[in-house]
Length: 112
Image (tube, rainbow, N blue to C red; front, side, top):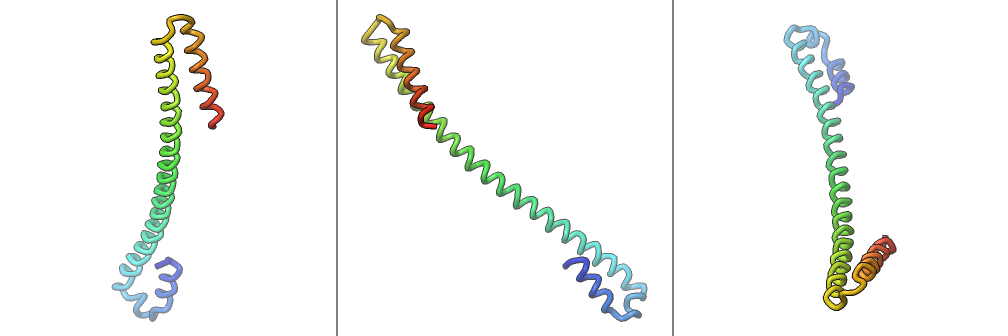
């Protein structure tokens, strides 16, 4: 219940009821409760916003994880190719390894 609505209800009470000693505490309590409800509604809105942000962050992290896994797979394949070449050719290993690694990097950049 909004404080404005509570004020309307209080104003509609008969004067004798409002000014009796028993109603004052009840009115103060009702106003405090209405204020607390407004605080809780604000807090709930903040919680919902945080939850939405967490879900968005989780989705972004999942996508990033997938991209990194793909990139790691390409690098792993490049290293496997380097090891295969090493077994077959003892000569010019540096040039061959550099070429394979360069191709993996260029392939990774072209996929972005």
